[in-house]
Every structure is written in C-alpha cells, then in structure tokens.
Amino acid sequence: MALENGLVARIERTVDFYGPGRPIPADELHTRLHALDIVPDKDFTEFVGRWGGCFVGVSVHAWDNAELIGRETCIELTIGARDAFGAVIDGVVFADDGSGNPIWIAADGSVCLVDHDNGNTVVRLAGSFRTLLEENVDD
Image 1 (cartoon, rainbow, N blue to C red):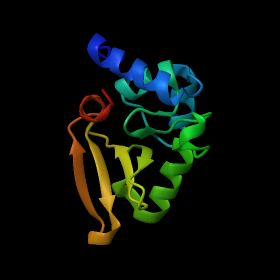
Image 2 (image 1 turned 180 degrees about the horizontal axis):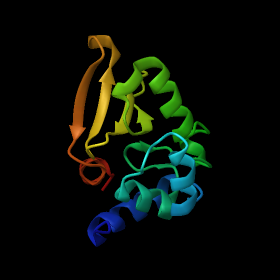
Image 3 (image 1 turned 180 degrees about the vertical axis):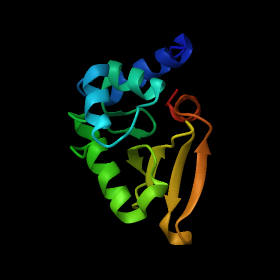
Image 4 (image 1 turned 60 degrees about the vertical axis):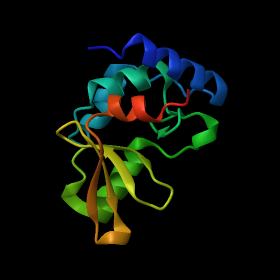
C-alpha cells in the first residue's frame, strides 16, 4: 500500500522547505541493500524513490542525500551499526539519534534504536517506518 495522500502532502511541504536528495530507483535500492542481505521496507523504498535521503522532521539517509543531512549513506550507517552492535541490527539503518545510537527498520518492520548509554537496550520507536513518518514529519 502506498503512502497515503495526506502524509505525502506533509512530506512534500517539508521537503520543499529543507530540500530533497536524489530519488533512488527501487531496483538500485534493492541491489545495493541486497549486498547487505537486506530487503528494504516498501514504505522506505517509496520514500527514497520520491525524495531520496532528506530531512522531514527526522533524517532519512539513502545516498546522494540532501545537503542538510550530509553525505553519510544508509549503507555506511548500517555497516557501522553492525560492526558496533552485531546481529541486533537486522535491517537498514537510515539515521541516528545524534548521540550515536542507530535507528533502523527491523526485519519485522518496526523502527528501533539501540541505546548504547543504557546497556545497548533496543528501544522500539514506532511500529513501522510509515508510523514514524506520521508522528515526526513537520506540519
């Protein structure tokens, strides 16, 4: 199911303000994430396919990101998080919380964070990437 129109309109307004990255075609995303044994979430695929890596109230890294969020790719974030936290990182890391805690879309579709200040506790931030967007995209 595609992102719903109201959410898309909110994202569009926010991207117009902060700037888009390069849209990433689904086949390119799937190929690059396949090398990490990751099947990308359909909503993440749609998001980066429309706006690339950009800031919308939360940073969403892909590659060729909007200038605001920098050059670090979701590939680099995922590899770094796997090096630091191992198999707990079972999906694509698309952001961090600014304190070095990776934020990723887990294999079950939920969005999680590893809190390294609290014994590497895994915190569920949202039930899905779509929910995270709905709760964080600027109005």
